[in-house]
Image 1 (cartoon, helix red, strand yellow):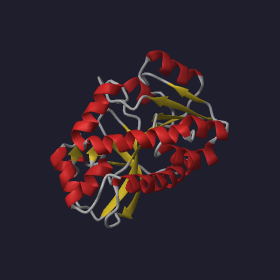
Image 2: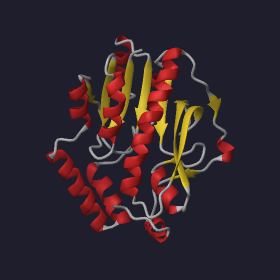
Image 3: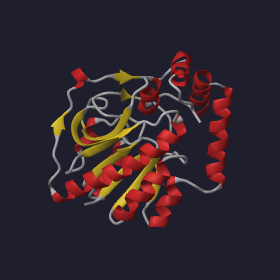
Length: 248
């Protein structure tokens, strides 16, 4: 089973996930990393939006943590090298040239891990075993962006990770794996994200095992029962803090 992982350049949380997953799936795997930007964003506009929402202190803390991770040489690329897995930067996962390349390499399964780009039909239809997405919430609830933030801001007592087969809608398709775990009182968003990625890694390994054996079970997500969230504002940040949580 040849797997192409599509992810984003995050040195804080994702190296831990890939270290665990590639330990068992280094052979016949490749990792492609896109910039951590949404459609139409630049690095400057993304930083400005973060600062406007979370404040200067949180922005400085994020910058220092990111710089520290790079100084310590923590990255997805370094994790891949440690496991002997090819890792390459890609600008657009929907580029026809990139899709042709995946086809020529005989990719059987695509796995999206925090990839911020919306997959178009040609990419979704490419792999014979389908296209999976790892989402940090109990779908169909908390579709959209930053589900971890929203679960803490809404005072939820439990969280989860879902893996589903991608279709042409956002965070929709057929669910094939889900894990639920408790949210700790007073837990920071940073600590929660770290814990969530460990849960996600183990769930992904379980799903990949089932896919490989042809035993994965799929059920459609009922979006009428779920919820969707977009980028938060300052009032939402205040709600997260009022619920007893912090960003860092």
